Structure formats: structure tokens, C-alpha cells
Length: 398
Image (cartoon, rainbow, N blue to C red; front, side, top):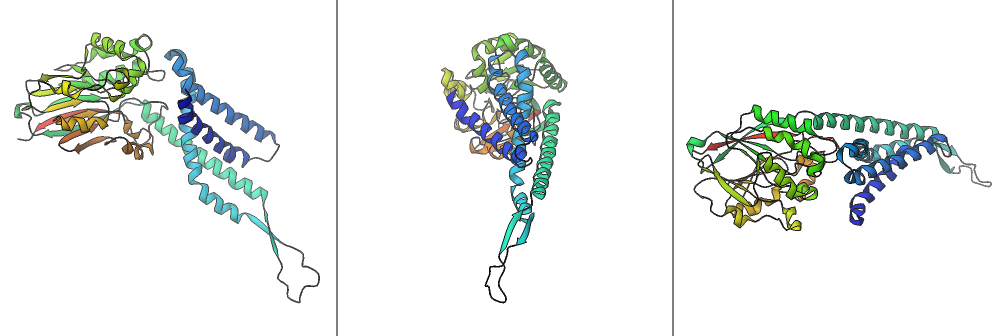
């Protein structure tokens, strides 16, 4: 808990302090009712956000959503308000420098015939208030617009993407084999059964050959979210549905969830593989977070017994696992985890930790495909990274 507050609580508190300075102190006169109300509002917003971050985790989803909705929406607003006000700092300072009045100071007695009169610079309070209020209103409108747009993206239908991938080892008879990839569904206090039903419907409409769910399905226990995940039993494909753990499964009780998914007909791949369609080696490894739960990835075990004359398709939650995948001969790795950054400019930060943010790339001899995910974590907002369900179409080099 101490680490949590240091990593998240302190930056959030500093962000609110910055907002208090720019949106309250700079836009109101000392001692006024407006300044007091503004200060109370900033403190209340901070408490609502911390409740969403802390209390929501301790409550069932049905109760937690009453804290999660206002808290996480405010988190997104806070984020873009701080960015907007930070960008506005330079023009704001330029305007404030110009918004001053100059008055001539008295000439000292006994001065020469042409004394140089000293000049005293006096700020113009009314103009300073006007500039500060204009910046605050403009930033608020911009941040609100960005967050509103981002909510329509996050809560709307995932985009269906078609992604062709050529594999040298793929038999010509299997060219056109289609894998529906979905990741980061994040069932929890903000996304429930209707979200799962929509995803299942969209996948089934594509008539895929195989369905791959590459981690972070849930943010809660089976008792809390089993009903929300139940529509997964209706997934239809020619060669079955498969699942690998993400980091959030380990936070939510991975063993009960793996048993529940198996009951629903979604086959967990726990450091293991199988041959599908008579010519594709499908392998799944646990998420790296599993190491802390004595359930980490084991590539030697997962790749053991696979026919290396066939292409190997690996399901692994985090793109960073591609280095191990490549060294073990994977031809294609399907991942999620990044959310494509979820909210710009986080997409610029993801490459610090992961070799791919979203889409198709190549690492050594392994193709890496990273889904942006079909849900969200934290704020119900996606900016520059719409949710997706990806149809991977395997093609033969011949």
C-alpha cells in the first residue's frame, strides 16, 4: 500500500495541487467565496479519485461502480487538464507580462535638467484575472471535449481489423486460416455481461477458424464476475477457443478463473501447445507476472514436442515475451497488454517497456502482433487507441 501511494497517490496529489493553483487561486480574488468553494471542490475531487483507486478494489463490482465511474472519469479529466494547462504555460506567461500597467515614479529633488525617470511596473489585477480565467475555461473545454470523445471510443463497439500475415512454413492448403484475437477485455465494475455479449457476437459474425483470448479478461474474482464472463460459452469457431493468462488474472485469482474458463469451453494453454488444422502449432505461455505466483512462463515445456516443420503461433499476453518466443522458434506471437497506449500520449511511453505498442511488427525472425484490446483499464476513455478485435489471416508464402 505504501508503494501504491508513492507511485500513484503522490503524482495525483501534485496534479490536484497544480489545478488548485491554476484553476482556483489564479482565477479568484483572495478571501472570496469562489476561492473557498474552488478549494473544497479540488479536495473533494482528490478524495473521489482516491476512493476509485482504493475502495473499488475492496468492493464487489455492483457496489464498486458507484465509486469507479466518477473517480476514473475525473482521472482522465485531471490528466488532460494538467497537460492542457502545462501547454498553456508559455502563452499564459507572455500574456501576463503584457498585461501590466506602467506608472512614472516621482523625479528626485536636485536632479539634472534631463533626469531619467525611473519606471515602476504595476500588474493590472483585472487583466490578470481575465487572462487566467480565459486559460482555465479554454483548457477545461478542450479537456472535456477530449475525454468525452474518448469515452465514446472506449464504450462503443471495438473496431474489426483484418491483418494478413505471411508465414513461410504454412501449407498452401491452410492459406486463409483466420484467428480472431481479442485481449484486455477487463470485465469489472465498469464493463459487465453486455460487454462480453457484444464481443462474442462480433467474433461469431466473422466465422473464424480459431479464437485466441490473450489475457486480462477480468478485474475481479469468479464469484464477482462469473456471470459477466458466462457468454464466452457461446463462442463459435472451427477449431476452438483458447486462452492465456494476463497480469490481471493473477491479481484476480488465476486458478479459479482458469477452471471457470475451461468449464465455459475456452481452453487455457498453460505453457503447452497442440497441433491445429493438421499443420499449425498453437502454443500458449503464462504471463510473466505469474513468476510471483509460481506460475510463470516455461518456454521449453510449451515448445516441447512441436513439429518445427509447421509454423508456430504463440499466444503470450505481453509483447516483451517476444524475445523468448523468437529464441524458441516462434513464427508469430499474438499479444495484448499495451492497450495501444489507451490515452495519448501514453503511446509514447509504452516503448520504454514493450517492443510493440499496437499492430504488426517483426522482432528477429518472429512476427509480433499486438492488439489494442477490447476493453480498458481505469478511465473509461480511449484517445488515439480505439478498442479492437483483430482477424489474423495466415497466408502461405507459396
